[in-house]
Each structure stands twice: as C-alpha cells, then as structure tokens.
Length: 146
Image (cartoon, rainbow, N blue to C red):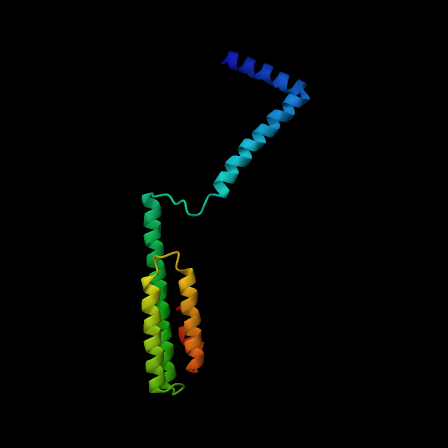
C-alpha cells in the first residue's frame, strides 16, 4: 500500500511540475470520459438487447397499446350510438361509419407490435380523412383510433 502511495505521489509531482504533460493527461481523461458518455448517449437505435427484460417490456407495451386502442374503439362506437340516438346521423351513415371504424380498428390492431409501420399508418390516416371528407362524416368518430 505504501509503495502505491509513493508511486502516486511521484506521478502527481511529475505531472504537476510539467505543464505539457499535465495538459496531455487532462485531455486524455476528458477524451476517454467523452467517448464513454457519447457511446452511451448516442447508441444506434437499431441495436436492441435481446434480454428477457426487454422482451417482457415489449410485450407489456404492446398489451398496453392494445388496451388503449380497445378503449378508444369502444368510445368511438359509443359516440356513433349516441349521435344515432339523437338523430345527428342516419342509420345508413352509422352503418358506414361503424364499418369503416371496424376496418381501421382491425388494421391498427394487426400492426401494434410493428414499430416500422409509421409510413403505412400515415397512408391509412390520409385514406381515412379522404373517406370522411367524401362521405361528409365528422372526424370525431375516429379520434384517437388512428
């Protein structure tokens, strides 16, 4: 232990007395820390660990999204039913909206675990907006479902 302490003291004295060596040591330590932190912070997003914890999280996340989607789907159906009850929409409109809602719900449910479906999903959203405009249907019946 004493040998290590004396070695560290001598090393410190040499580094402290030589300004150039001190600068090199400080910069080296900074680079090592910087690259280490950079590697942690800026990891490539496609490199995923295959641990069971990650797999469990993915399963839980998909289940959570599935639960939220189902609640939103039920809310949209209740809006359709209440608007039909107060005659804001006709029976035919309610059937068309429900058919489209079922189609969108089935599609969305099929891609829940697919993280790379964002482009495909955007196309589906645009199609739904276009359909709603063409059929003069309020977009409130689809809020949150897509």
